Length: 277
Image (tube, rainbow, N blue to C red):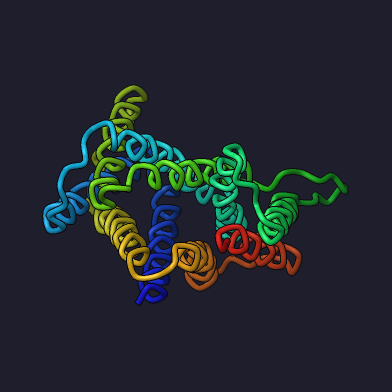
């Protein structure tokens, strides 16, 4: 059951990210975030009502609220990266997120084991391969969207740290706190930048789909941790970029060089090793 739920979460995140990238090619990133995050907030409120969990308290949920803001920044960077670069390059780099909680644990005295260090090395190697491109004149430049993918990885990694600290009493309330914090922030950002928040009617189904996929994935992964080992759940759910890459290949016809494909596999494999322990 845990494996099935974790894989369902990976599929939802991957599909939602793909739709987010498509939407960001047609709309402002803040518009995509505002609408999809609002849809997600409604969904998690329904979840918390049905969970019947007791309210843990504001202080206990502060880390989760911070996690929500970090995730929102990560999603914004990811969507923008997808809009200007190849999804097959950006998605695997963003999968480096597990390195962040690993670094936080190390700073607290929880030293990574040998397998995790190997994973970190593989992640960095994969990112290096994916983020470099050669021009005809022989110059090597950073691939479009690679820098934003690193920002996304940092945001998602901080989300894992915060949501872990804020979900001791209730995962439903933690996810609700995260989304409740992210929605006002993105709305304020949209108002400051005078970004239109009313998307074309034709785009609404896609934006709703992004919010629904994201929320269902959060629910699936949270439920998976109650059925099986967190390490296994983390590894399986970290495979979400594979879904994005496959969809970009099938729907958009993206083609990557053999070196880029190998770099993506190395980065994803490294992320799985980091998350496994």
